[in-house]
Amino acid sequence: MRSRQALFTLAALSLAVGAAVAQAPPGPPRGGPGYPQVYDPNMPFEARDIAGIWTPNAVGFGGGGRCRDCGDRGFSHEFPELTPEGQAAFDANIPSYGRVLGSADAAAHPEEHIGRRRAQPPALGNDLYQQCNPMGIPRALLYPDPVELIVLPDRILQHFQWGYGLRTIWMDGRTLPKPEEIDITRWWGYAVGRWEGDTLVVTSTGYDPRTWVDHFGYPHSDMMVLEERYTRINYDTLELKMTLTDPVFYRKPWVSETKRMHLIPRDFIQSSGWSGLLEDLCAPVDEVDTFNRLIRDPAGTGQPAQPLER
Image 1 (cartoon, rainbow, N blue to C red):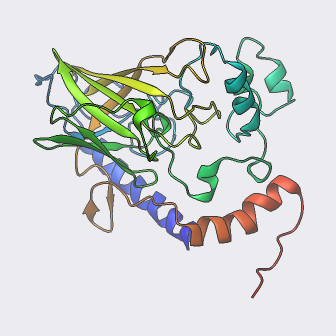
Image 2: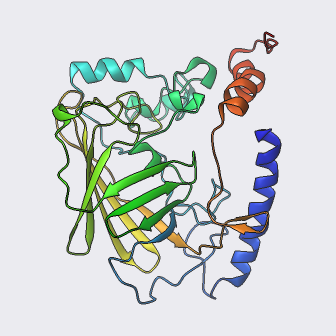
Image 3: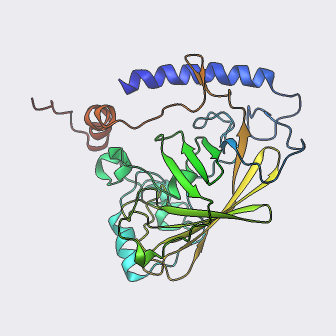
């Protein structure tokens, strides 16, 4: 069962983190409480060498006081300018992440867009990821768990630990289809990349409109075009800036804050003596049929779990 497996995974990760911190180069912490200095950012580096495991989170899994650049899993604090169609889609999405709708906490932050102040219990929400569907892009880039960049001669693969998703960025010179030319949308979209100096520019489109822009439930249509700009600014830091253009749902391009990810050793994450990304897969047999029914839904509704029909 995933719940028992998760406990074992967390314990194994804690041991791995302790070992990695003990072996880290000397130097003062560069972030919050307990942030381990894995690499000296002043080490020499090749700006276009972006292969490796990168994470906003210093330890490779959520939180623990070591989250240097995780952010709040949102695309931008800038208020988006929605079209009527976009507003309708936004209103239809019911997230479970953010400040609780109608709470004192939500009322105390009127400076935030309502998107960050409308969370409801998962049992009352409609986040498709709660049923183990892929998060898509850019949402997967905003989650604090690691992503491994695998650089091949004609493509770059982004392998996400959370959900164990795989995205292909083609670097072979092919032309990205226009949104109106897409005949089959994809959970992970269509993406092409090119180098502008030392910045990797990725342009993508063709995303399944059922995915969300971020964890707060901002929508996108099948006309969305996303530009990502990756720049390695020092040995251990990769910066990401994004611009979302969707004339169906947004009145103007929506620009993200600068996101940052940090390099960790390939053997930093370990389980069962095996190094590399964890298979943190959302399996319906564990999540939807067991966890949601027995734990998530009763917690959100106050009703006891119902037995499965046989």
